[in-house]
Image 1: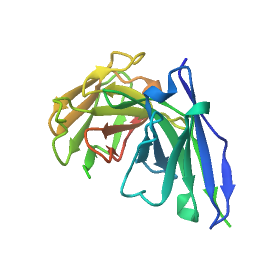
Image 2 (image 1 turned 90 degrees about the vertical axis):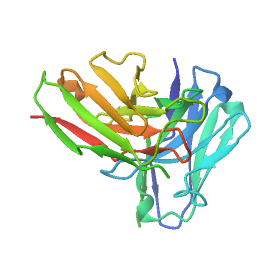
Image 3 (image 1 turned 120 degrees about the horizontal axis):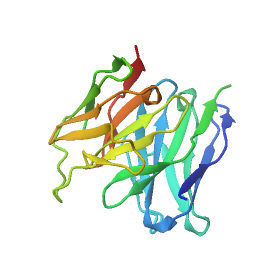
Image 4 (image 1 turned 45 degrees about the horizontal axis):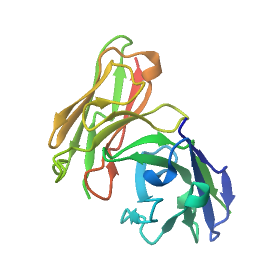
Length: 119
Length: 112
């Protein structure tokens, strides 16, 4: 069974850093890209970026380029989303999702990681 | 960036009746390989998104056949033939033809 399991909820103060994880199982991890999607409270889905676990190649949305870093440790089938200098506006649910190729759709999703940034 | 515009933003529907959601892209979603990478996702309250349809009209595994997708170029439609209570949620179209991938703003389906 394909699963993406994300790390637990985080509460951070403004200015702090964050690294959340997404562990894949039940499939060959390096064969599928992993994407990250943000959902601010009560809002829609925003595509942040994507990584190829095979070669760590990444593509970012211009809206998030320079604001976040997506990385992967293929030895433990885990992708990461990292951010620094957090602001209250980074408060959101963050989802990882697997990109099926070559049809290019997100077929499996993590359960989401709620990040709250508050002083 | 390709802008995805959904209509309506809210759709009150009677149980057992059909529902339709439109998604329009700011430019053609036909990829250089000839395919169109337009998918539809459903997000039930408190849940992560779930894939319903990919490449315009292909139903994902386990998706009921009351869901169907159609369209071409820049205009796409998701139809539910007979709405059931479990269909309540927000529906998103998403394009993966060109980076950055982009989502529509979402259409909230609710029961009258």
